Length: 118
Image (cartoon, rainbow, N blue to C red; front, side):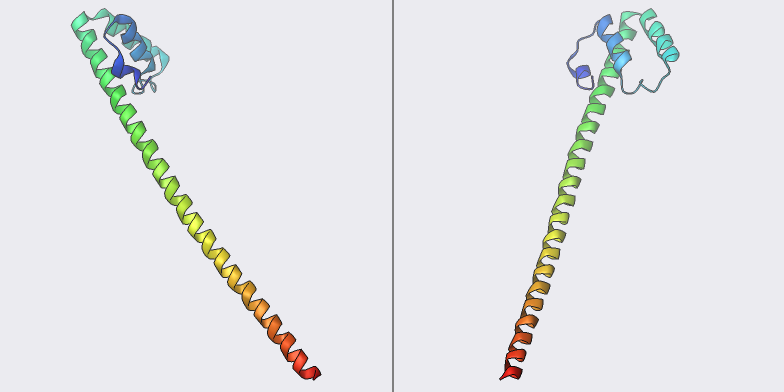
């Protein structure tokens, strides 16, 4: 519904749909939303158009904010994954160095043992 407000033309049906689905009005209890609906529908068409346009604009702003949030979240997640990959690679490099050191020490020990046996 966030994008629907951008594409709808004014009609009472579309006004009712906007009131029912408006992100800005979702927090209202049903009774208040019903009173608002009754009040708006009792107004003249000029007032209804004004309410419709206001709600449509709010829905557009909400959709933009939601899109921006999603893009920033995706970017933050990608940054996190990159940092995680770098940290993992660093850990693997350090482990490989330790394995190499251990292997070198074993080779040195074997060489010492051979020298002792001679």
